[in-house]
Length: 596
Image: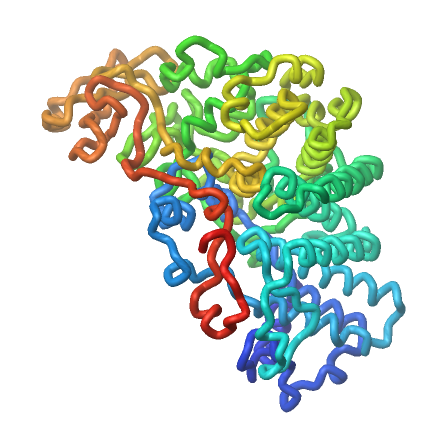
C-alpha cells in the first residue's frame, strides 16, 4: 500500500511541477485540474500520504556535525569552522519545492465533498509538514520568507524580503497547534497521528524557547518563556494521556538496545511514530556496513566520558579519568554505554569470539553499536524498524522546559527523567543535590546557564546519552549557544605509549603499538599472546606522520588524535548559514544575516 501511494503521488507531483518557472508557481492548468482530483477522502489521503517524509536508519550516521563523533565526511560545519565557507560555496537549504506541494494542498482541499472533521485531519497533517519545513529553514537561516500559498512566476511575493524569525515561528506554532487539535489519534501504523504531532510540537517549542533564551543576537529573549511554557504544556498532556510509557522488560543491560534492533516497533509502548521496514513487503534498509567500524564516523572520547558511573557518580570526577585505557573506561558505567558502543568482550556474529577494536588513522578506536544489528540473516538486517519519535523525548522535553522556566520540582523529575534512568538501572536524579553540586566540567562547557545549573546540566547530559547517534546533539548545541564545543578536535582511546594492550578485557594482550620508524614484521615473525593468538601490530607516531595510529604525544602516548585542522567557531555568525548568493542575485530584497 505504501509503495502504491508513493507511485501515485509521484505521478501527481510530476504533473504539479511540470510547468514550473519558479519554486512556488501555480499548478499547470493544462494538465490535471484540481477539481478533478480533490473530491473524496481517498483523494485527500493520497495527496497527504505522498507528503510523508520521515527519518530512517540512516539517521544513526547523521550525528557527524556534533561533538559526539569524528568523521572523514565532508561535513558542512567542519568546512565552516575551517574558514572556507561563503555564500558562493554554501549553496544548500534554499529549496522551496516541498513547501509548494504542501501549500497547493491547502489551497485545494476544500473542494472535497467530505465532512469538516475529515478535512481538518488532513489539513492538520499538511500544516504539520509545513511546520517541519519551516523549522528547518529557521534553524539554518533564522529570517526567511513566509509563504502560505502557491504563487505565479511573476507574483511580486516571490521577490519579497525575508520575514522576521518572530513572524515565521509564530506561524509555525499556529500550524502545530492546529495540527495537534485536529489530527486524528487513530491512524495507520507508520504514519503520524495526534501524539506524533505533539512530540514535534514540544520539540519545536523547546528549540525556539531555549534559542531565544540563549541567543541575544536575535533579541527575542523576552518571549522565550512563552515557547517553554508551550513545551511543558504539550509534553505534559502527552504524559497525562497515559498512552505511552518507557519500554522496559526489567533488563537494564538489554532494554535500551532493543529499541534500535527490533523488527517490530509498532506495538512498542515507547515508540510514538515508527518508520517500518519489512523485507518481505519490499520496504527494506540495511545500514550495518556503514554504521559499524570506520566507514565515515567513529564515537569521540568526549561522548564516552559523558556517561555516568553505574552508581550515578561522575566518571570525570575520578583522578586521571582522562588517562584511563579502553577496558577501564567501560567498567561500572551507565549500562547504556555498552548498548551504544562496542565494549571490551563484545562478540560480533559470526566471529564467535571477542571483537578486537580496529585502530585506523583519522578514527578513534571506538566503534558504534547503535543502529548496528548483530546478525548475518539478511531478512533480519533489512527488516529492523526505526523509532522516529520516542516517549523518552517527551519526558526530556518536559523536564528541560520546566528546568529552564525555574519551576521544575522533584515530583516532575521523577515522572520524567527518572523513568528513563530507571530503565537503564541508574539511580534517580535528585533536584536539590544536583543544584547544590553542579558538574564543574559541564559548568565550564555551558557557562551561559545562570540558574538551576546543576539540574539543567544533568538533563543535558541525559539528552546526550539517551539520544547518542540519533541526530539530536547538533541542534541541542546550537539552541544552547554552545558552538564553541565543536572547536575541540575529537579524540579517541588513550594509550600510555608503545607496547602491548588488552582490548577485550580478558587480561590477555591483543595489539602491539610499535614506533613509526619500524616495519611491521611478516606474519610468521609476529609475536603471539599467551593464548597463541597473533598480536595486531600498529605503527605509532604523531599526527601528520606516516604512522597508522596517531597519538597526541606520538610514541610517548596520549589519546588518539584524528585531525590537525584548527577549528574556529565565530559567534554568532556560525550558528547560521548564508542564503546562496545566486538567490540573492535573483532576489535583491533578500539580505544576509550576522556577517554572512
